[in-house]
Image 1 (cartoon, rainbow, N blue to C red):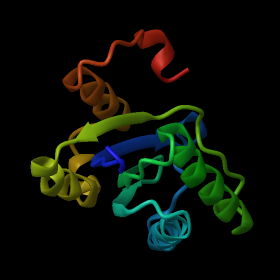
Image 2: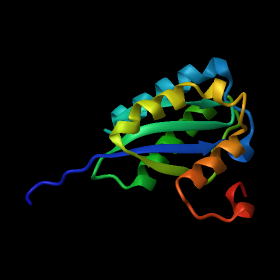
Image 3: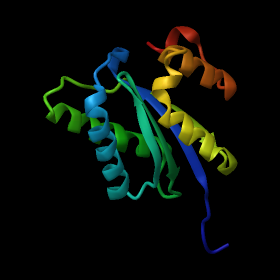
Image 4: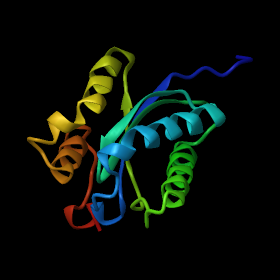
Length: 147
C-alpha cells in the first residue's frame, strides 16, 4: 500500500494541578478559542473542547503523523503558557485519560463535552474519570489515579 490511512478520534481528559478550580467560567471561552487555534496551527483537527474549572475535555482526530502523547503535550504546554500569561499561577496535572471514539459515537461525545456543567451537578470530576476508566476497561490502581 503506498499511502497511510487512519481515522483515530480521541477523547482526552486532563485536570488542573491538584484538581484546583483555576479556570473561571468567564475565562473558559477564551481558553477553548486558544486551544482551537493551537489545533489549527499544529494541524490536529479539533472536534470539540470544553470543561470545568478543574479539568478539560478535548475531542480531536489524531493525525497519523503525530503520536498521541505528543498531541496532548502540545495542547497542555501551549494552553498552560497561555493561562499563565493571563496572570494565573497555573499548571496542568501530569498525565491524562485518552479514549478512542468510534465515528457513530462522535455526536454523543460532543454533547457530553458541551454539557459538562449539567453533568457535573451529578458527578465530581473524580467520579467521572473513574467511571470512564471502568467503562473503557482500563486497568488502574486507585491509589495512583489522582496522585
